[in-house]
Image 1: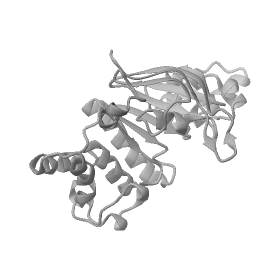
Image 2: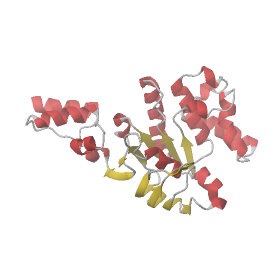
Image 3: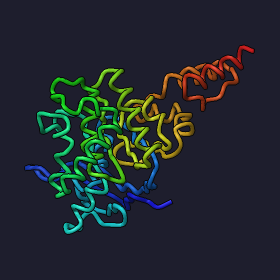
Image 4: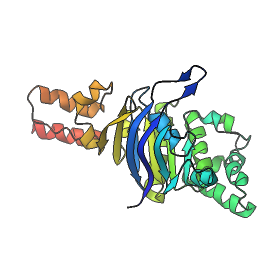
Amino acid sequence: MQNIIQTQDLRFAYTGPEGVSPVVLDGVTLSIAEGSFVAVLGHNGSGKSTLAKHMNAILLPSGGTVYVDGVDTRDEEKLLDIRRTVGMVFQNPDNQIVANVVEEDVAFAPENLGVPPAEIRQRVDDALKAVGMYKFREHAPHLLSGGQKQRVAIAGVIAMRPRCVVLDEPTAMLDPIGRADVMRTIKALNRERGVTVVLITHHMDEAAQADRLIVMSKGKIVADGAPKQVFQDVEGLATVGLTVPQTTQLLWQLRQEGLDVPLDALSDEECAQALAALLA
């Protein structure tokens, strides 16, 4: 499978008025396959959001290299192509909404890319249907719920027809209902449309829904694998300030009491089955 994003020994430090700050990314090497769903997990200051901003050249490396579909992100002549390939969705949807009507907001990016009007109409309708917001196309964004606003923000990125969407903590400001709506949208984009998804999150239950989980700490990758594999290292994750899903935590505690239960039962249903088997 082709890699859509690659980093090689990526290093980065912010530069401020007092000089260069401590290193935020310290030798990050990874590949993200096209069509995959990858979650990046880490405590505050781990470097996960800084990594996200390198994936469509919002930030450029202090050292090492980032490639998007084989193109070096430092190639200024390819910047527009890079951002057409990788779209970004941020934490606060209010910072991404620029129009007074939902469909006009979704049309904003394609218009700026010079897409013909007839195709813009098609893209807007398609994007809003993809996120379940088509019936709200004539609504004012400020009257929507937080989850609905975030889905409109995602639609605005989809309308650019990117092959990859990077979402930087898109549910951080949402209630549980809004979080669930956004996660359903993200999974549908990946599984029904084949869009590569990179989800930056601090919610364990969201990370558990990905195909692959990358754990960061102090600017380095400290774990990389399937969520069922990574979350089994309960003590290792605790050393970098992270918890595990409640299902894994419960099963781990039972293991500490000497009970023979699996640690890879992440979902509520899998955990319930494991407990039922234990009781039987």
